[in-house]
Length: 102
Image 1 (spheres, rainbow, N blue to C red):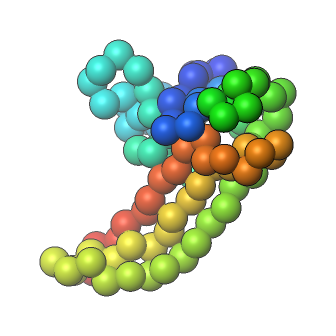
Image 2 (cartoon, rainbow, N blue to C red; image 1 turned 135 degrees about the horizontal axis):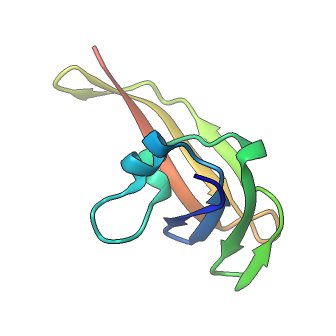
């Protein structure tokens, strides 16, 4: 699926995603979201919109990644926290979390 809009808490990104990623992104409310998809290759993101700047940018937002490897109980580990950040104001456009079951 090319040029698909994925919403985040602070804006949206336009990215070329697969059908499988689109199914993950669909939470059943008629829109697609960044969080369930996870990390998207920068080269697949063509533009993004930042609510704080109220502006659309023809590039990929910055990606900030933390690897807490935090045990959450019930044999689950929080492996990665990723945030898509505006290149201009550094506000969060969207985020995701990756978990691992032991």
